[in-house]
Length: 351
Length: 174
Image (cartoon, rainbow over all chains, first blue to last red; front, top):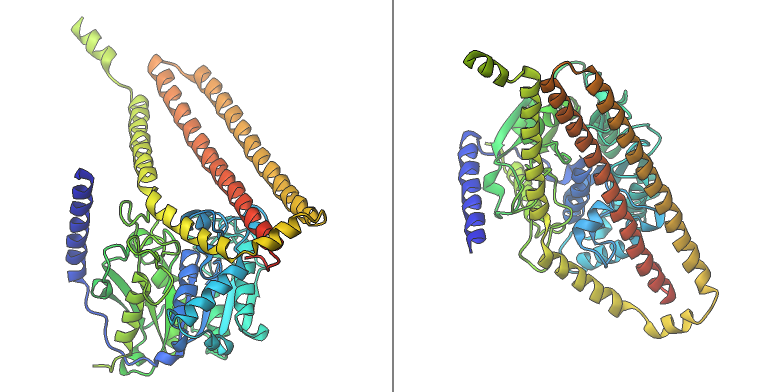
């Protein structure tokens, strides 16, 4: 009884603090985006969430960028262990290639979700572009895992020429930049943003949309807006922060721009590393040059309920501890619902 | 007399620093234990395992499994898969044990050299605390890695069991 009371008080406190913090942030603006030109990318847990959001709403998607992420539903690979165990073994660093994610089963489960209308139709994938990346020196999510992501999308109908899989860079577990102030390419350490001499955000976006204009030198010229994220959250277990960020180039205020959603990885939210991910990973200058709005939803660490001590996006079920389905993967999942509501707001007529 | 007594109770800066560090490590260790406790959710785990297992076992063709399990050639794949896991597990575990051995040796040498460099009893104590905490941090990293290896071995064996049954049932691996 005391334990329940304690959890209740903690949740109350969390919500009160969240509301107080959210008070300072403004509402997400309506910007009349061209919603059918949406794409998504992310690193690590953000890459798992990329697949989850992309497949849930493939109707509006044109592509996805998955950096060091396993296949959709990966945590359900092997039936003799729970989602968290699968997520931290088979989906990250399996002992042998045979114990990597169980892609045939995951494909079967994905088709079932399609039949139940819990995700958008899988036929949408045939017209989309998927960028995949696995660093040669990545000891957190091994290439054996990302190989299965490639197989997953191939088997579900993404044509070979629409899949770009990069494995030849000696990179650690990180999003890649060409910024000399970032970490050395082949190491794995916070904030998991490494300088390997090329701009991965550009590679992702240019592969998905093709023939983009290269960004100019210097700082991004648009505006980073911190907005109130709580109005989109309808679950006490989402682990989502009180505020999140959207990058809006000046020319996009009138509407008609494309949308790219970026999911950070574990220990990479603004609550942990400040503006390093949403301001300095190379997406924003590309947005300036190519009429994109970039949305950076945020998750923060939570050490009680939900149990998410590293502030990861949910790919094993912490955000839905109550329902029998433990839904972290479909249109009904708390985090996916929240981000979709943000997209809806951005697509409303500009004011 | 009083001055001498008070002076002898003064804590040297190095020892104070070591004691502060000890306190920090203790707090962090308590937090780790709390995190470990919070990570357990047996009812959710049981629910996930039982519903997935029921779906899997009911999808198998048990007559075919029985029939195929009488065929000696099916055991070749079985044993080669198991041998692959065995080989990878041995290599991973021995690498981690070697790393642990190196850590213990390095920490032992560091302790011995620091003891010989100490010039006062308080410095000896500070060095002992610092070396102990360094060793604790190294061992903790090592033990976390070892437990991750053991979890991945267990996961590989679970995957192997599921794959073997699927193959005997005549399915693609599911």
